[in-house]
Image (cartoon, rainbow, N blue to C red; front, side, top):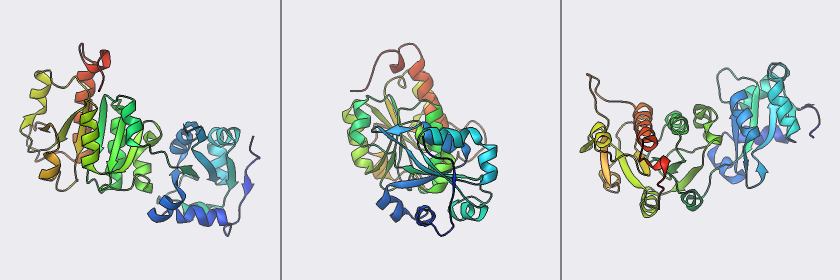
Length: 286
């Protein structure tokens, strides 16, 4: 069991190291990132990868340690070193306007693509050219809620461990396998070779989502490619998919934002897969 929370100096090397995790280059070098707030820290405590605990250390204010005593105690029971930090130290480490007083340093959680495919995934979200960290985290959260088996962030997308992306995932980052750093061509090729039907979510797609559902084509293993927030998917990326599918607009709205469209597509697949004859009741990729 870890010792009780220990006061830490603002000039401590541990504080300096945590502060530097704001930079992507330092995150990549150390393979560490920050998780802020009680929900993210709670999920990090419960998460393990390759036999190791994901949460490495925890910084907390005295007030947060009292308010979230269950989280701090769970961290201590897990053997995590807990640092009692002044409000200004947490403010320096945190990336929110109003810090919640808990900041955890975590090990990277991404997995190689081949290990994800070995699990024969039924539903996968592929983020290609997604640059906004808030959108990336929100799509990850949607994928988790829809019961997806994995999320892939291609090398052209935002850093998964950007503090805004971690925060927007609201803990879902720790719930399902995530792959990073692969090209969209590699991701789509590997998914297709594993027997997964790859669909490009495209507002101008030639196939209508409702029609696909009505035709019974959505019940098998499926991967959705989601593109850039502003300009969608380039033609060369759409061409990689088995089909480009649009979400029907029944009202007067010009379009849907990325996260909303992703939620609609992922839930449509999830519902079809859970229907009689869907892949949740027997079939699998590969």
